[in-house]
Image (cartoon, rainbow, N blue to C red; front, side, top):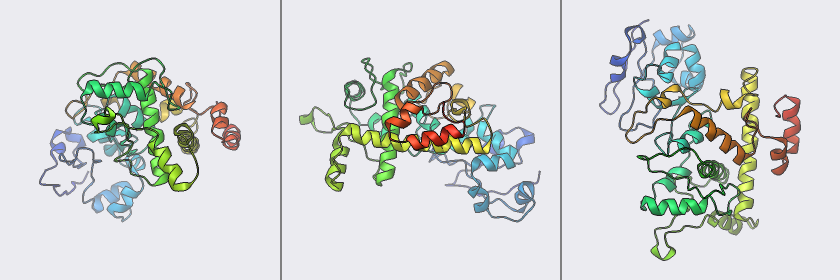
Length: 340
C-alpha cells in the first residue's frame, strides 16, 4: 500500500503508527491525547487512498460522510484499527461499528457501557456523568442514588434497595438500580434532545445546598415543561413521553438493521447491543474498568426489563408499544417480522 501523509494534532505525532504490525502500517490514524474522547481522526487522505477505496477522486469529507462503519468496510485496515484485536490502543476509543466511545466504561463501567450500546453512534449522553461527578462525597451520592432509583417517583425503578452508583475504583456487579439509572439517563437524554435542552447540565438530581440536604428535584423538568408549554405533566408522565420517543427510535433502528442485513434487526441484542472485545480485557484511561461478559449480559436483561423489551431479541414487545401509544408501529413491526 502506498504510504500516506499526515499532519500532527496539538503537537502530537502519530505514535499509533509505530505500534502497528509491519503489514498494517499503510494506515495512519492520529489520536488526540488531550481530548481522548475524540474519534480517531483521518488526516490528509490523498489520491492513493481514493484509489484504494473506490478508484475515484474524492475529498476527506466524502469519506467521512459515509460513516465509520461503511468506511471500515471499504478500508479493512481501518476496521482492524477500530476493533484493535491485539489490544494495542484499545480501539482508539472506538466502541462498536466504528463509532466513538463517549463516557463509556470509564463512567461507571456497566452504566456507561450500556448507554453506549443503545446507539450506533456516539450517544452524546451526559445524564449519567452529571450525577456521577456532583462533587458530593460518594457515601452521600450513593444515598441520593438509592432514593432516585428505588422510591417509585420514576417509571424506572429497582425496588430492591440497591443504589446503582459506584466509585470507578470500586465497581460492583450489575444490579437493578444500575439498570434503572441507565434507563433514566437514556430517556432524559431523548427528552432533552427533543426539547432542545442542554443535556450537559441536566438533570438536577443533586443540589449544592446544605439546606436541601443536597437533594435535587427530579420532577423539576416536568414542572418546567408544564410552566413553559401549559401542557401539565408529572415526572412519570414526562418520562413516559421519553420512553415513547426511545421506543420509536428502537423500532426505527431495528428496521434499518434488518434492511442493511437480513437477520440483524431480529437480533438487536447481539448484532446491535455490543461492544468491541477490548472492553473485556482492559481500557486505556485511568480508573476505567474491565467489563465482564456474563455481567454485561445480565445488564442487558435488566435494562430490557426497564424498557419493556424482549430478552432474546432486544426488541420492544406488543405490551410496550401499547403502553406508549404506538400500536400502529407494532403493527408495522409485526408485518416486517420484527415484533417478538
